[in-house]
Image (cartoon, rainbow, N blue to C red; front, side, top):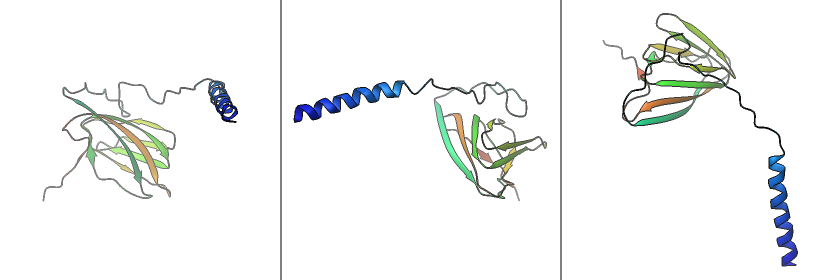
Length: 142
């Protein structure tokens, strides 16, 4: 009986391996490949230092307005759901919908807003340097 069970398990393992290979070719879709941010500016050279990659899932509630901020590091994202509008200090505007990718502006003040009726969810990848921030919020001097 043990031999029969072991044989059946081995058969299942081997055939599942074959099934996994027979699902078809892997599909690769390039979402972004560029040396420029979404506003057309050339991305800066990478800074010297120990690299640190940060990946964030950010959920922005409906009708939310993010504070004015900038990123001192190169970052890119993919909007998973909802809609998002990004506006630079000089009024350049980008409207994103679910499935759109973004290569964000670097060292340029901007803000985001969700003008939709559902949360906007975005995954953002930051290529930073250890010990340096990935986002700097504008501080209002009074």
